Amino acid sequence: MTTLSAVNPAIDQPWRDQFEPFLVQLLDRKYARQGKRRYVPRNAAEVAERLDAFLRAQGETRRARNVRRMGGGASKEQFCFDLESADGSSELMVLRMDPLEGIVETSRAREAEVLDAIQGIVPAPRIAWVDPDGAYMGQPAMIAHFVGGVTKPTSGSGGPSGLGIRFDTKVGEALTPQYVGNLAAVHSLDLARHRLPSFDVPKPGTETAVWQVNFWSRVLADDGIDASPILHYTQYWLRQNLPVCEKPVLLHGDYRLGNFMYDEDSLQMTAILDWELSHIGDYHEDVSYSLEPLFCSKDAEGDYLVSSMMSVDRFLQLYTEMSGNVIDPAALHWYRVLNSYKLAVMNLTSGIRAARDGTNHQCAFLAFLSASGTAIAATLAKLLTGEIK
Amino acid sequence: MTPGIDIRIQSIINGLNDVIFPAVDPKESLAAEQKGMIIAQLELILKQLPFVDRYHSLCRDDMRQCAERMLAGAAGGTATLAACEALKEMLAAPADNPRDDYNRVGQAVDALIAAIGQDGDAGYRAQADAIMLGLADRQLWRDRVWSADLGFDPYPAELCSIEDMATGKVAPPNNSGN
Image (cartoon, rainbow over all chains, first blue to last red; front, side):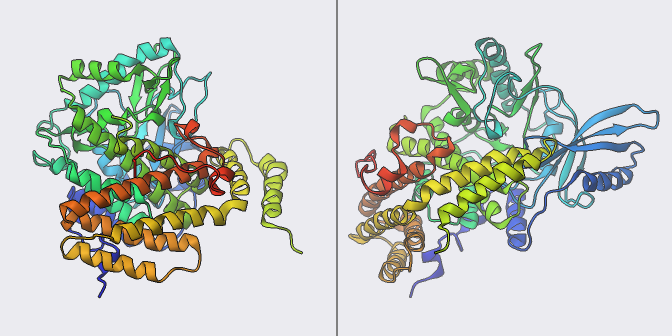
């Protein structure tokens, strides 16, 4: 007789909950509520009303005025507003709020934790308040102080979610040491000194890699709609080739073009954004993420420029110099495969499911973005066949 | 005669472009940002429409052929053998349409891959490894051709037109050697 696990082996596999306990609970909650209702995008008036109640509950005497939607925000609903004092002065704030589902399931409370920890180490938004369970805002939310800057040149163009951004040589040269230096600084954060209560540290050995494979494989198993030979083969390959990590470090988890802002006059980076995928792991994971072709541009010879700034060789050399971390080519290759797997799972499973079920504020965008998952998988195939070493 | 699906979709595109989108307040950024993506997808669907059956049939046929090859010489522990039995059952009971059949057989193949990872014999593992990598590479190429018009593919020179792929005029490259 055919067992259930023979048809869907993820049903009763022990790895389903063998990763960070906080994230296991996060996914458990997602799948418990999945399929029960649709999501209707918020309008500014509704957000303003909820904000008022939230701010009062925080003991805040200032009021939210002029609430308006911000552009971008592929995975979260984003609004900005003026926090106005009785004397008429005001401060610009940013509200970042979860839709019901999206390409990734993450925690605002955890993102706020890491943003607190890295203050003074790299430029990043400062968090003012968090509504971790959405008790006031209806969905989990966090409010940050506004940071000025741009993610792409105002005179240039770029595609959705930061893809397709191009820097000219002057901008690229100015940003290069900051881009690499900030990454090295994140990786050097002293985990013993900073409080990150919702983060767990994997044991030295292969657990660092296993946790990542298990997390994304759980998402693939639970969100997948169509059969996907490439993704299931990749999961198998990853498990057969696990690298060892002796000293896990703090990772950003989504460090790339489009996820930092800079001042166009001074060419100084003003903020590293989108810390929602931050976790503790192998530095090769963050380093290899920048090598994904969709997050690169090409130079005149057709060679990739990491984050439209520097060659791959220069990026790896600078990172080693600035961090003191040695790049192991085999580990780098494994994490390139993992990152392609992770990005493809996000866009080809969770994103499509949310688009189908109407649980996101940008369903048409998520369906459109699924083509990026296929494009990412193209690189994944080249990594697996050895066409890309 | 009722209007064909292609005419209906084209009429929706016309209505969106000529009536609905001009009425969207540019300050409504959420709506404004999605206009281009909606039209791009409708235009892609129009292009895919004549080839839907052939595309799904190609995917299904490749999946079924690889599944049969995976079953030949299967060797391993209880997980591998149970997954092989499940796959045999799927192959013996084809679904009504090629897309559903691709998914049903594909999910059983996915399960077999996972089972081989647990307790497949080394020789069988190597055989299945080669078959799966070849299938994954070919299926991905077809999927890339299918969605290339949305503009994300980093290697567009490797692709052909949807028509050439779906009619078999251009075959998938054999990068894995399988």
